[in-house]
Figure (tube, rainbow, N blue to C red):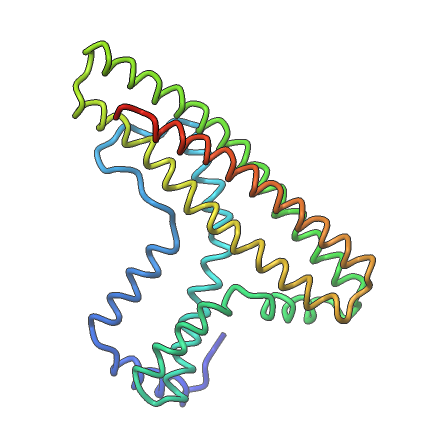
Length: 247
């Protein structure tokens, strides 16, 4: 998108009003949202399954996060133009983040692509199906990682009990398990965000769409919900196993 020259000049004036701290804070927020928790520095290399999980989840997360970040930036600019100050920009950023990845922009794009309502709903349902396939891949990889982590916890507990390693060594080895747990928590949060976006799309489509086609879309969203619930259940089992560990 190319902004008119007067808008560029105005945005430049607005950005000058932001303090260095505010800009730094927003940059850190954006960086923190874009990816999940990083692997502990100096830790062992990721296993193939851990690498696969992160690649799949990161590719999925980008579709959620990018919209929120772009929405926040646009909202910040709009808020500043309306409010005329940094406070207005901050308010706009919050509103933009909430709406950036929402249903409105997505539906608007689909309406521009398809003038035919039936084709538009078919395309949306296909997009949900594609997200379901990605979610299924994440779930399959997560199950492998969680299974391996449970075995690792068991091995660490046994080595600690037998005196093969001390508590400091055990904690160091357990860091990768905790990293995986934190990463999965972040991934589930993003999956839930995407699920809520799809429900917003379905709710807005229901008012003007073919009931049968909208029902097909909702069936796919419910399938996504079941997969997210299955992933949460897998993570809960890891959290419980980690909780009862001696480390």
